[in-house]
Image 1 (tube, rainbow, N blue to C red):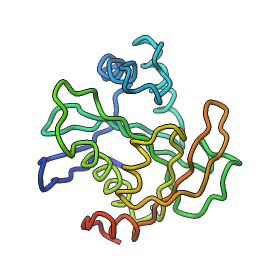
Image 2: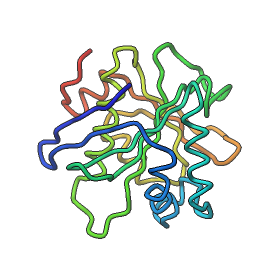
Image 3: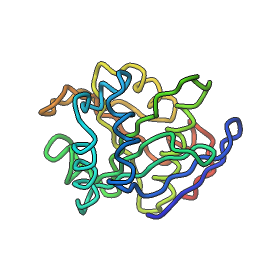
Length: 189
């Protein structure tokens, strides 16, 4: 999937472009090592380790990463993966059209009201812009109450806790209809 653009009624233009693991690594390093990104599990990574991780993702046939832009400036990270082949292999009952998702907002000097919700809405609209996507699957840490609230706001329903090697996760899913109902986004069916 190439680039994607969405206009948010309050905050303006959001876009996604394929991530360049080497060129974007210094920026990503600042984001993933920020204290607010503790659930990203890269707190002790250096720039070379961040670049290596995103080169690994770029080379993977079922996982990719995108840099998110707000008003043309880097502002968030989004990952898309096949949960039947990455992250959740053997941990849930996959369905045709499932797409896994991770997102991370850049640390902000001055938080913008509604920004994180606009980011997750953009990421979900991007995923559902692909007609093959029927359901988005996420597995955030069970302790990440802020992301659980955001997930619920865009239509996710909780399936239940699952044990992953690195964390206890809260498996949640969102269908296209659930997303459209929760957000009133004009995503093609």
